[in-house]
Amino acid sequence: MDALTDMLRGLRLDGVEYGRCRLSGEWSFHYPAQTHAYFHFVAGRGCWLQEPDGTWSELTAGDAILVPRGAAHTLASAPGVPPRAFPRRECLAICESVFDYTATDVDSDNETLLFCGSMRFNLDGLHPLLKLMPDLMRARELMVSEPAIPHLLQAMVSECAMSRVGASGILARLADVMAAQIIRSWVEVGCHLSKGWLTALRDPQLGQVLAAIHAEPERDWTVADLADRMGVSRSGFAAKFTAIVGTTPARYVTEIRIHQARQWIGRDGMRIADAAHRLGYDSEASFSRAFKRITGTAPGRLKSVPRQRSSPLPLPPGDASGSSAEPGMT
Image 1 (cartoon, rainbow, N blue to C red):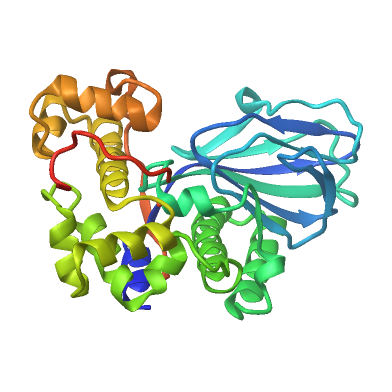
Image 2: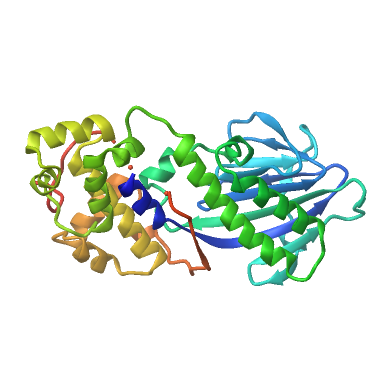
């Protein structure tokens, strides 16, 4: 488990925006697909969730959900209420990234309190971990295995119900921790597969290989290098890697390099030519071709975005075969 623990320790959540909402009567808000994760917490009267697959499920006080890849969904007082976009312009700013919203004529004896947010992972959206996650994750489904979750939920209920100074800011911090707990619990008990990325990380030999690739994506990795780390032949290594991970070592290394490049270019504002050089490509053109093959878009379409505060995840956090003229992996 050391490789898995080390990799998850490096996972971070950047809080982009949070808001507390007081609602009553009939209401329905649609949350469109986005690149960031969504987080929702319910206090007071419950509500209904239309999940990314279109099904409706009821949420009660104390429910917390994480939509890790930002899939489209709807929250409503009841199924069938016509949805509208969340009225962000009607919100009262509490600080730079936290707001309050109170609907007109709220019945304080029959109100729903929502605390919602957007979170950005420090990992690329195509990272193996994020691709493995379900569209929606619920805290209650993981409570049995994570004793800290009930206490966090109770603390969030209390903060939502009070109008004390700094309540929204405290809720934002609690939301960060709750999201981290949800992910960790899912990794530990909610994702048992016979093969795949997490299974490979748990393997004492393959786990160290994957950790090395992720730690140094710019290194000129070859199959021989990675096989030596496992102490096996190149053919034996390639066969085991492909059987468990589901892709060839060459393809995997290329994907991780491109995922890292997306972060350098889109998040940190690195020049495309510099990213290509750092990853060992002979030219910006060859890098761009590899980038488009993996992501489906050209690197020039990425935009640099300002970073918000970062919250660490406590302990425990990636396809078809084929080789190409990538640097290394010969």
